[in-house]
Length: 280
Length: 162
Image (tube, each protein chain N blue to C red):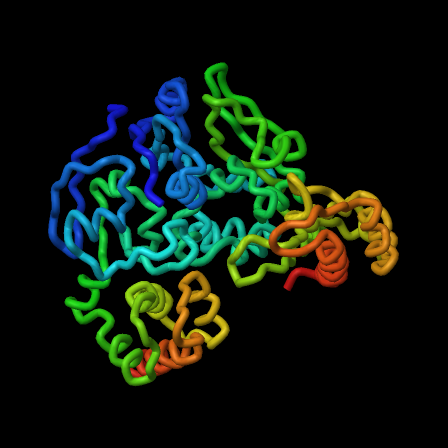
């Protein structure tokens, strides 16, 4: 349970990190709350760790142009204390207390969660529910990737070997936006067996633009599009039934696919109630 | 710059230490093996159990999920430091009085984590205490006595202030 030997370098800037990542078999180190565990277990044996923790300006939360921008190095605990996130990104605020335990949240970063792309992680699902975007800087400059296009598969993303995720952006919640979040985990703070992040707009007595992003049910977070359409009409039980056409969770160590399907329905009922409420 | 061994200067329990460390050495192994501070325990070594909890720059982290080389220039506090400074004497006494430990393996991590919650001020509910300690496993007590002890100290401290 000790890491294999590796070299270590502290990046002074994003450009410097990109340069260092050009070394063969280099890995980027942010909060390290998943990476160092995998190194300890020797599931990963990189030749070089590029530590970006010392880079300034990646740890800010800003409100601009009707968007909330969260720097890649913003730690979960810092995000939990952010007034901007509480006000303008209420779905992320709801999800944060479910991410790991306090000591993990003191260290783990928003960018790290997205770059790692664990299928049972909370933030990738929030990004899909919110139609967020991800800023990436690589050897050929900066680009922005929609969350929808970012998650390619199990622990796979649109990031190339020399890319650095620098920030994420979600639309600031307007007064007519409703959000909901719920998950089942074996122990508070553990990865979810099944979870649901949701966002919708109130349109008279109906909901519009319903986005339901489930996590822990496949290789990546997935939208339940059939259930979204049904839920917009207000029939929660019909939406739960429609999930059968959206989700096909595989069995894993926590639960069978059938149990996960059942739990997905329970979560939808809970989240539908949250979506029906005005923000308090 | 991209080397395996690095010189680090870390302030551990108020004392500046300078050592040469292998990049792959975790902070908890550095504290135990290089500095003989064996109060921080090594349990699961992948961030699940909380036995290795230490404070880095004032916040509690997993000592097995931070590398010693990353702590160059940082302030690290271990259970030895916070016990010697009397910062947690009341918590330690409450743990003893309420049988909140049996084998003691989880206790240093429990104390540091509980102290972080209590230092935030206010009177946390039992549910909040449980949520804050959720990342620290105890295989002896069943947690009830630990929550009792933390709650008693929270009451005593908030009473003392009021």
